[in-house]
Length: 227
Image (tube, rainbow, N blue to C red; front, side, top):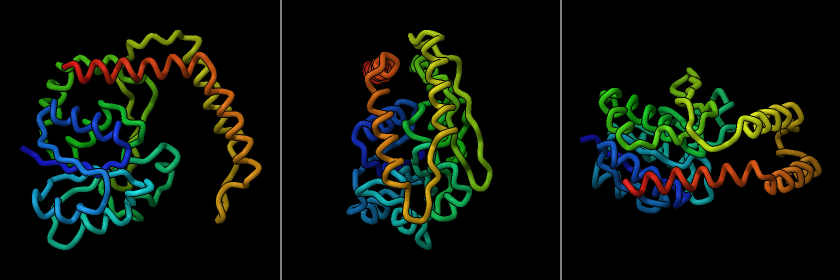
């Protein structure tokens, strides 16, 4: 059985991924900071480390140096928000084998983990489908990158409760955001632009669409933990 060590800062994300990976047959241990990483690496010799790429307590660069230390065979998969995945030099900078978008999509993370561990993906997906959670996955396009090649992974058709007009609204708002998003410089984003974006986001957070999305996420997690 392949061993996986999770080094994830967000507790909900950690608990979700640990439960999911165990349910499809992997041996999983987890920690929430880098303090004991070297010790756990030595103790369990994981085949794969899945870690937060750019957190407050977990830094992907430091994790990469420890995981890829001479003599270690472990693969490294880092978790980043979508905007970080646009960097073509991301994996080289973080000494990682692959990166996956957060918030995590179950089908995407299972596929990436299976490919890195070189296990039978078809057999893993049979177990995954038996969990009856894949129908609750978001239908949005998610990304993961392996090596220098970027892959766009489309999830299966969703059975969520959002109405078509709500989905269209989300697509329009995201397209508008990409069009109007400010360009960063060496010192980060301009302060006034950040304030404008925050004000816009806070207004959108009050919308019915986000309420439905949050309810969908909660229903998905509840269904997973009931299995």
